[in-house]
Amino acid sequence: MKYAALAALLFAIPAAAQNRAADISYDPQLAQSAQNRAVVEQTLVAMRDGVGVGAAVVDFLHDRGISVAVRAQKYAVMFVRENGQDMILLSDSVPATPRVYGALIAEIVASLMYAEIPSCAERSYMWYSTTARVWIELGGDLSKLPVVETLTGDKLAEISDGVSLWADKDGAEMALYRISQAENLPYLYEYTRPDLRDLIDAANARFVALLIDELPARKAAGLR
Image (cartoon, rainbow, N blue to C red; front, side, top):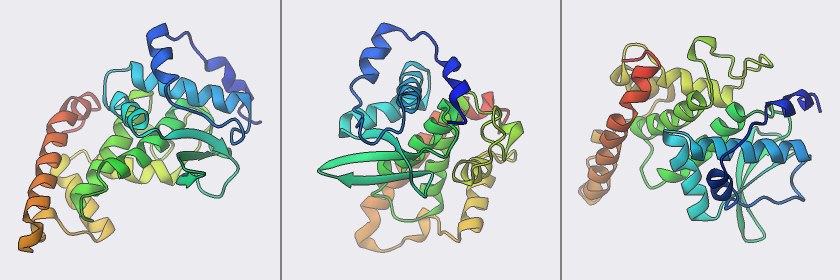
């Protein structure tokens, strides 16, 4: 594969982190090469062993029994259920690097984490925040956007579009506004049906908690 040279990026991993990453299953029938599988494992270990939202993403995969594999497919990433197994499938055409794999995995996991929240700007913001923070934790550089993998110069809209909206230099409030405008989405407070009040209150509490949790990441990235 054209990314064979990236095998040299594999690094020594603490035993405890290896054990945790081993809890995430892989289907060898789906993996396109030993290198792809190695990078998936490296990605999950790096996320789990780091300080940030990546660990929560891997914990979610483990708790839900979701496997991760690579195969030839049209889309960069898909969530499917096959033979009773929930799987995140990564395309073998995207750069086989932790930054790309991690961000794509985070995108799917975020959509599952917040699946019960109705369509709104806040929900999209939470998706993009999770994706962006994992990408940054794995070495993503906001100054290089829309390039998401600098080693290969790849521009993946599946990652860069949401990350760019989240990374608004005018702050989280403006990012939320621009997400609402770009995707024609309402805000949570616009849901006024009485029967949805508890759901909306819970969703708003989760959104506020995420804003607090992501503050260090935004500051470290030079964002307000």
